[in-house]
Image (cartoon, rainbow, N blue to C red; front, side, top):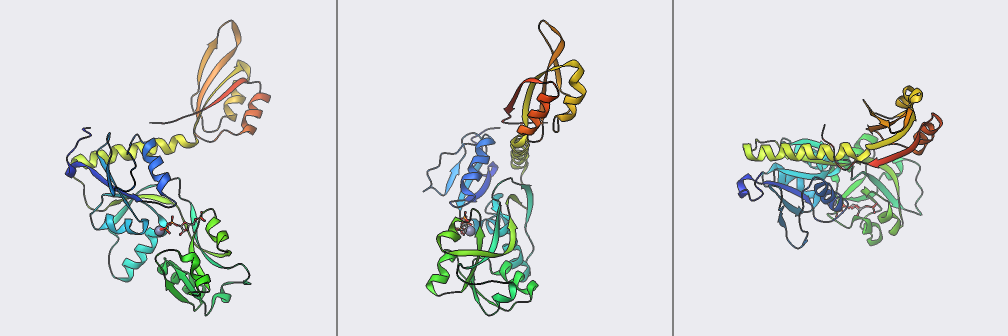
Length: 303
Ligand code: PRP
Ligand code: ZN
């Protein structure tokens, strides 16, 4: 794969410039072997070792950039994606993108929050309030489902200060750790939408060179995500205990058995466990007769 591919043969991926997804997006790419220097003042960065360019933008703009053909790919939260899709449906437009991969980060919820001191018994208490949000479509859908008449005030940022400014009595915004709400003396009272990060691709066809690069990228993402929970486990065990020990290993198929020098009755067992290995599992292995148990992280995996 020539890293110096001409622009027409380089994938263009939109990522969040700063915010909840920014660091995790770059971490995922780094684990896929895609390295970019991050002088954040630059909007477009070339990866030195993979035919991909990164465009750093506001997350809210990412679906549109992919649908308009400015970018081939985007990493975005399903919150932004669903909001955009609802807006496009309202406007009579099609989706224009495809889901390429669900990613294992960026978990958060879109929630309605009220000033801490305000009492709340249920959605009926939202009636007649002004709710500030950057997600009018999702907010309106929630209110309609609950049969509540409230006013939606659209703000493009800093939604959390709207109640203090007297712009609204409530907000509907993303909550990840909850620290933004806490810092603004707000508390979440209803969950409107649960979100996580995804990789989207443009619905149109890519040229063969880019299509091949995308295939490689997806395979690497799969390898990284597969390896995230997986562990390499090594232990010593009496041959007689092997059937029980194998039953205890989570998601391990066909372990390797190796003889131990000078010990006929015991073997070394090596296996890849596809699921998390907990202390409880290790304690059960020990009780079953295993010893010298080592659990090692796996960095990458290709099946
Ligand atoms: C969201 C949201 C809050 C923050 C909540 O921002 O607008 O500011 O995350 O996170 P917390 O519960 O951990 O404090 P986002 O990353 O979507 O950026 P943007 O609002 O600037 O687009
Ligand atoms: Zn945003």
